[in-house]
Length: 291
Image (cartoon, rainbow, N blue to C red; front, side, top):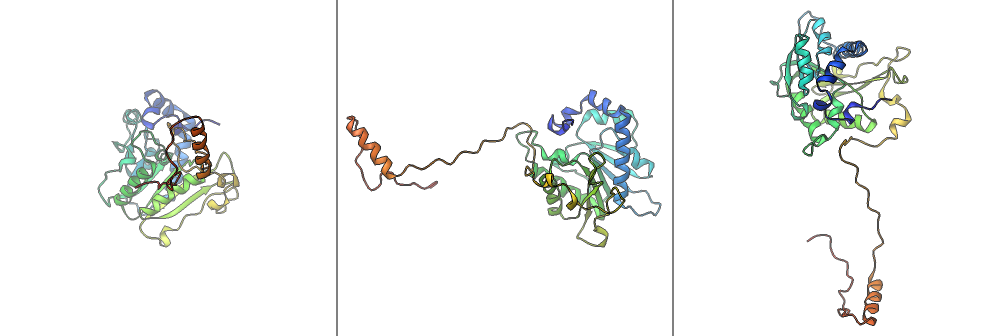
């Protein structure tokens, strides 16, 4: 199994000029991106009224997913942190407006003007602490709050994600709910190792009939909920991935030495001829942790 790119380096470093061109020239990746984008657009459930919508492509990269939006007749704004990826998008003459920025610091888009948002394999990057100033929970909070503000009321946002485990999925979904979104996780083909895909489907506004989580695709085309996930995933407890800092070793609880032990040690020191303070009622007393 290949290592996750988000565990190797920050996105703006990992997707350098060489990696950006390699990514965009792969016919396999182009095909996968098209399939994921088409499914995300389907889950957006935009009204079929013939009116082009203004959509946001978060983590747009070189504009592969944006091509699907353009082919569907919509206008779009691409948001990405990698300058190299956006340079490739410009070379490919992507039809969307491109913005260079860090989604973990907020999107900075005018409130209420976006009709929908998609993101392919990008949101899980927020669960990494790439710099000493990065706090994954604060970055998730800033991202979802800014996204909620820029979406029109009732608009949807669909994120195709690769959470590292169940706890990381719940972390992402939890901050989306706190920002005001309604919705849940749609898992396509949950019992297939290769075809399994997860989509976070969110609606801007309080829960309603329109914000109900859509049906997922299964091997038998029946609806599949995220409760059908494997038991191995539920046993994992790590919520965020910290690439650069090793986990601190937990200190073992040491036995506290009592008054009798201290008195015995002081007596041994006196026998050796050492100057030892007199025993009082304060000897070996337990002090408070703080003032």
